[in-house]
Each structure stands twice: as C-alpha cells, then as structure tokens.
Length: 358
Ligand SMILES: Cc1cc2nc3c(=O)[nH]c(=O)nc-3n(C[C@H](O)[C@H](O)[C@H](O)COP(=O)(O)OP(=O)(O)OC[C@H]3O[C@@H](n4cnc5c(N)ncnc54)[C@H](O)[C@@H]3O)c2cc1C
Image (cartoon, rainbow, N blue to C red; front, side, top):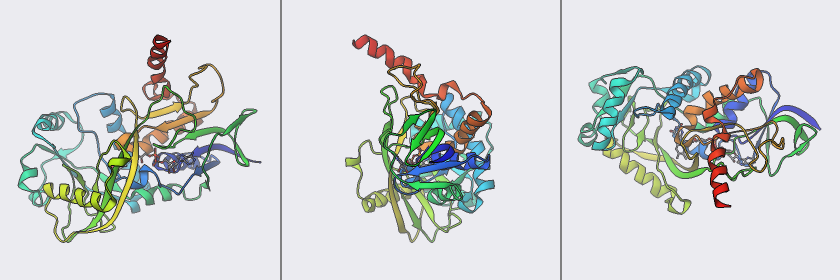
C-alpha cells in the first residue's frame, strides 16, 4: 500500500489550489477526481477575480483579502492563463446605486475615473447607473488554471465513496494518508453531516468572439470580461435554484448575450463555447474551511485528520488560493484556522434545534 501525506478529494479550483500549495511545500499529495479536472462548478466559472461590492461585514472583508491575495497569485504564478484588466462595476438597479456609491467612497482599493475609451462601449442604459472603476482585476481561464495547478501532482480518476479510517490512516483503494481534505463542491457529500447545509445554485457562462475589443471587464446585468489573452470574451453568469430551470446551453448562451448587450455594444459576435455547472454556498454565505466534526459524537475521533473546503458560492476562484494557503499553514505549521470559517460554527444552532424538536 502506497503512503501519502495528504489525500485531496475533488479536482476543482479548491482541490487544485490546495494540491498546488501543499506540493510546493514538499508534501506528497494524491488527488482523487470522479470525472476530470474542473468538471464541476469550476469548469463553468467565468473565473472573474473581483471584490464584493457591498457595505461591510465579514464576507466582504474576507473576499477583499482573498481578492488581493489571488490577483497577485494568479498574475505571478499562472500568468499565461490570467488576463489582468481593470473592472468597471455598474449598479444593477437604482436601489443598488447607493451601495456602489458607498463602496466607492469608502474602499481602500485602487479606484479611478475610467478613460473615455473604456466607457465608449457602454450603452446609455448602463451609463445611467452608478459605477466604480477598479484598477486591479483579472479573469482566469478556469479549466486551464486548474490543470496547470495539478501538473506534477499524483492524480487518480475515481469516485471516492466512503474512505476507511484505520490505525490512524485514511485508506482509499491501495493508498493511505494521515490526512484528507474534501473539496467536493456541490456534489453529494462523502460524509453527510446534518449541521452542514450546502445550497446548490446552477448557472451558465459562455465564451464569445467579437470584433469589438473589450478594454476592461464590465460587471452589470451580467459580467463581460475584457478581451482575454486567448482573444475570447467570457460572459456570465446566470443563477438558477434548480437544475430543472436550467435552459439548454444554446438558449442559456443567447440569454447571457442578450443581457450583455443591455450593457455593452458588442459587434459581430460568435458564441464559441457554453458551460453549465453548480456552485455550493453555505447558510451564512461564508466559505467552509476546517476539520469535519461528527454530529453524533463531537468528541469522537472518527473524522480525525479529515478536513473540508467548500461553500465558496460565486467566489470560488477569488477565495481558493487564499483558503488553500490558510489550510496549508494549518496542516503544516499548526497555524490556527479562523473560527468563523470552521464547519463547527453551524453545530450549536443545529444541536439546539434538534434538542427542541425531541
Ligand atoms: C456559472 C458559474 C459561474 C461562476 N463564476 C465565478 C466567477 O466569475 N468567479 C468566481 O470566483 N467564482 C465563480 N463561480 C463559482 C466557482 O466556480 C465555485 O465557487 C468553485 O468552482 C467551487 O470549486 P470547488 O473546487 O469547491 O468545486 P467544484 O469545481 O465543483 O469541484 C468539485 C470536484 O469534486 C469532484 N468530486 C465530487 N465528489 C467526488 C467524489 N466522491 N469522488 C471524487 N471526486 C469527486 C467533482 O467531480 C468536481 O470536479 C462560478 C460558478 C458557476 C457555476
């Protein structure tokens, strides 16, 4: 039986970023993926790296820290798959104007007034709302960046069902490791714990070619990326609460394009690819990072050395490098993880509710 330091289940952006980080630190990692790299939500993502435009709160602060970290991470380590370009964020409605104005006034991020060239493509409709121009933003090639992170990392195509914990080691197939990190996104949980609830949100994005050159990314009715290194423009994303509501990829892409054109004048457009996928969000919208705890007996060691990274919602590409770094420092340097991100934060509320219902 071959021995590894750490198993990672799932090769989306969370699994890939963690595998990259741990391998850089000399860890022997084995990644299990049931389909192929970035076949889940990660492959569908527009993979825009942007902050959260809102007033305040722990999610905004976390995403802002992650955004700064990730811009630097992608542009320096995976520059070939990263297009750095400014971002013009436009309020989606009159009610949102106030939020955007507040953000603009109070943010410590670099903002400026966009040049005429950068706003020339906006429709009168888009120009009628408040906006903020952020000088630093990026869009990454979702699948390619996950593949690049996993280069040189041992990888097995296999669906993990119920890993065994025996004599202090996790066992999967003919391999064992002391630690295991579940990065399974919106797919069925390997260990289902009732106090952790994942919300699943379906969505689509498409890639287009256009004779119009986009000098910056625009977030409005939908997000339209700057023209990327590849010459393509990403348009995304939609949100559906159930899979049954998802239109066909052809219809979904036409709808995304219609929404994009409410904001930007795009000429001679050809849809080149369409993607569908699921994001997973937590009940409090914060990502989930940390050790798994059994609800039956919180003191039991049945999940010893088993961790999870999940629940990043629509910010998986912004958060993943930052969360992977926190997890790596926890696993290798015993640095504590932030309490407000640990899975067990949901436990007390769930246990109280259970006790009341008995
Ligand atoms: C349409 C769309 C647009 C988006 N746009 C953006 C954006 O612009 N910016 C941004 O930051 N985020 C965006 N997101 C969100 C982002 O994509 C997700 O937060 C992120 O992909 C989550 O990554 P993950 O690794 O947790 O999950 P996933 O990418 O879903 O990866 C989980 C992987 O685990 C594998 N797996 C599951 N169970 C098992 C098992 N039992 N055994 C083996 N393998 C298993 C799956 O096959 C899958 O590959 C978007 C999402 C969607 C759907």
